[in-house]
Length: 313
Image (cartoon, rainbow, N blue to C red):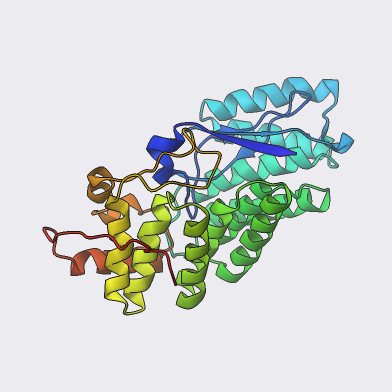
């Protein structure tokens, strides 16, 4: 089973969820194998621990030294060198799903490094991202059905602007998270962002409302809901959603929060989310555009009054 420890969760929750692009974080598995994790771009530490139940996932003693070296290179940011070792390991032990997952993770990092949101990359970047997709598919065939791998497959497809295929991967990732009794928030927000990109605004709003009912402290989702409602022409609803960012002491039913009953909010989040730069590189192009339009329409000095139930449909 997999369980997740979110460090700095209460003070940096808004940065934990993204559409595409990544930062180095990893998981620890027995024996001495780590599954590299891609969830977001901002440098916030996320530790995900997955204990493998599959014998196929266990490396040989000979491979352990190479695994350690690949992880060390990864953590130092030497992704090209790390990738070379993962390529060797997948050739040496092609039945090891963790090796394929970690290879795909590094290829995703390298392939998306110079990508422009909304534009399909070409050349080496495209080759790496296509290879990453194949790696995640291979890992899935070998039994890697955890939501991290599936979400990263979606990230790779998103970087390739293959929106519908990415949505399918994120949907499977959300189902896998629920099956493992983990939070489906990351892949579900990604699904909402894809829905905005495909102009499926009703579906996007439905997904985000579901996220916010599960966790009213999901700051990024509040901003996304404002963008969606503004694009739909519901200016009052958009303003109410944005105002909820400025309302402190909203309790969350999410028992993983530390402390569990303290709400997030206040004028600090208002200021942070008053600039669209907060979502650049993390949201789909259409979602960013909608949020910019919403912020431009607002009077910056206007009094903000939050609806008591801003997340009702």
